[in-house]
Image (cartoon, rainbow, N blue to C red; front, side, top):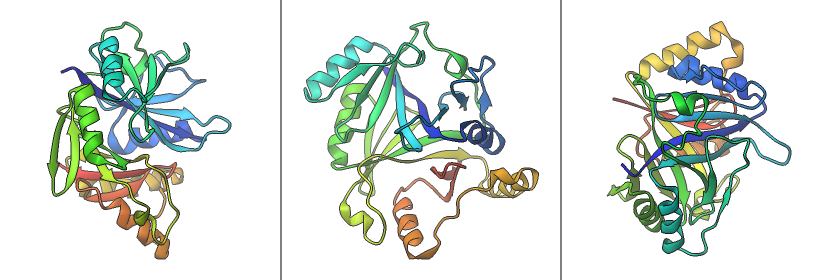
Length: 264
């Protein structure tokens, strides 16, 4: 496999509590070598979910995602060949788990790390276990989903497919769901640009997840998530969220990031 999706980043003022939420509800694990002043990454065995402190001038919520690739040089060559206007920059030296940041056709940012570079730290160096609840898709809002599917399949060798009018590309475990972006999507609520929309977990039982959500709030009232679907605007946002064909149960994390859940 030339590339696999290896992380998602969430910016939050309450990044440590948000990480604990994913550990408590979805069984994600924290690193044995944490960097307490920087971020709190947790993982599901493949995906590192990096909860990062929100810096000045930055918005909270889904920030970016990332790939681990077999060859950095070949990846950058493929990006330039696909579209010379696509740009990339080296990451700061204090970000050990990704060497490069780049953007796709819709200016959605992703990171690149080279496999076996020896630079991975914390949860990114410890991945490799199986667990019953794991991230299985990330949804992107794209202006031209077919063209985006071509980009991700040609550059990263992800397998592209189309079902019920929706394009997706997959590394064999995690799929990018490429949803259509249109201003018409935002009739009745606030418009958003093309961006990361949400991500989702595959679980052994949706009913168990619902039951455990209630139990967690009993243990810790900080684990109350955001209400969904209330009022006309809330219903419009929920209708847009449900355009993803994968999710069966919908919720948010503590920061308000959309999550959906489907069963094995």
